[in-house]
Length: 111
Length: 113
Image 1: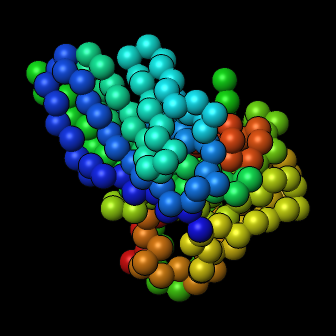
Image 2: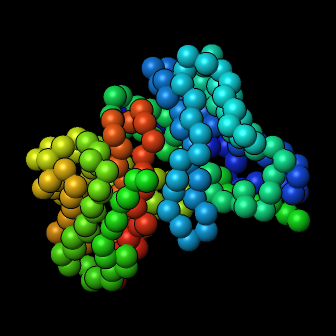
Image 3: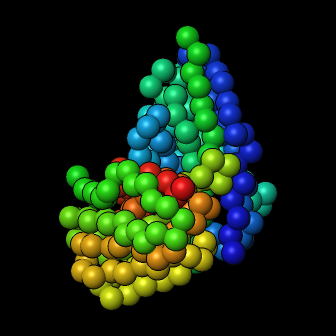
């Protein structure tokens, strides 16, 4: 089945700088790549996704890039703010009904 | 907005005990999922369902049963709990399978002593 590797287990950036979280996947048939955010002590919520028919998507300060040849996708958070501190999970669709998550990246925004 | 609730929020049981975790969604979603979250592993899919009476096996199903009694209700059953099942369990729902946003419940922390 699909495997998703999240390369950074922890990441620390200064407030106002950009943060980049990188993920790779194994199944060339994967076509949908969502990102979820989990704030401390809370549940997960969806933040942004990208489909395989595009290579870039932006929503406000979030940018997702997809490189299908390298089977790699990344989340860029620009102009980071303290409320961006959280665990971020990348995921890839496997089959038609389920997604596979990465292990998570704990992002800390330093003042 | 999507609403997914879980009960109990915390549960402590002993090895060999019987545990049922409950999940209810009020969004008329077809798909419901049970995940466990463990440090270093992210979220791993245990079971999922695309409608009442349907059950699909996930990626880490051993030791777990599940039942979808209605469109709203999805239960996870641990009939002989083991310490390895100590984890944070999340239920989620989505309108379609995998392609669309999943809405997560608040989680149930289970400790098996």
